[in-house]
Length: 521
Image (cartoon, rainbow, N blue to C red; front, side, top):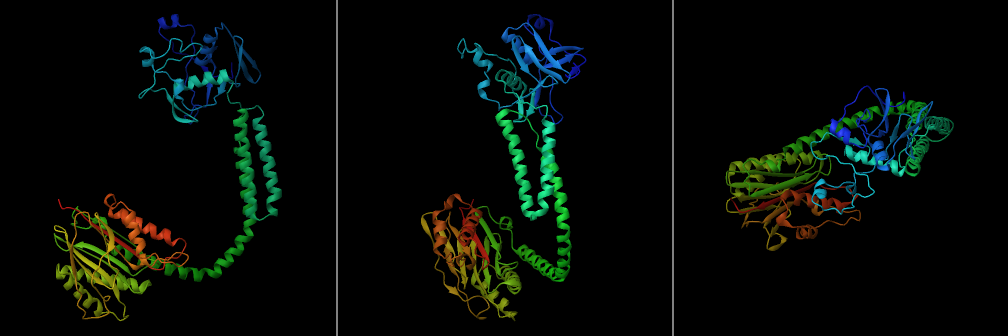
């Protein structure tokens, strides 16, 4: 009796139920410390008397047995005789359940019974448990196979485990076997690992750990026996760590000497890398957030992305409202890469925005002013290609100007996408007094403009083939443009370019901007 769970008192049913019942079995909370139910008692002690739990009493009643016999030894309970049926149990009177998911076939709703939806003999030769389940019931606990399982489901699985003899067994010598396995594995590691390369030693240990875990799993699946591989695996892991620590001591000393010799060079590289990273953050911070352009109307969908080929790059884009009605956008590409190009990019973007806000909505005047101002301070003789535009957000009337840049793509709902034929001038800073012409067209509701830098068209794959212009049109042709946002289109084109490039190194900055014009509210 000392081995089974003991209770000082108990709660009983009302007198009418007690007198009408064919048997009485106890219900108890059997969760482990972590709140998970793994085993269920068949036998408990109440007020110094042995008593059955619900599942055992349910089976006794179903079998028509009139008595129990408890077979025990010095180590505890061995089995319980239920009439002519013997049920093996653990020394504490419990059985470890071999849980299965909560199958729907186990359940029959009360409504189906009351409505007569079941045949008259549906429960013939069956053991039925009547219980309440649903939201709000407190008899719901965690099991090894489900985070939440109804208590009646667990009781049903107790009965199934007993009838099918499917309970899990923890052998009496399991702890001894686990300790011996730890000794064997640890001893093997001590003898073998110092003789091989550390990498091979780790692989050998991992193989042994997988073998132990697999053997434990196989014993569980084939014979329902519970062996815990934690001791041999974790204990051997500590041995391996100690061996590796000793083995690495000499390597660490040599590595420290090498690190000391390379420290100066490494610190210099770290300094340069840090400065370049800071420059990248500053440069990328200068670009506007396409989703937060002040005053941008809802019927104008805008998105842009820029991916430098190195830490800093020469591509640029900008987008802002000149006034309440006119939206300005530009995509540019400074000749060259690196720090010089990034500085000239910042200068070009700043002066271009200043010219736009100062000159108003005439794109010709704007581009001529920008060309003059950017050219004024250019000791490095750099130049920048640009494609700029101004959209009247109420009418869709659009001015476009090319300064040595790739033409934009126009995609309309009723026509295939195509590159627009726009009169082009030289890049900015090539001819100081060049007069840039502007082309005027009208965007219709649903029209989409896509602007790119040559980092898209000149992206190369490992075979040095170029992505080219036609692949851009093919991409837009196969997309459902009306169902895609500007952000999705930009991201999709960028992904296609990167997939085309594969393992090839990105050779130029990539900039993509998409603008969709819809019917104003």
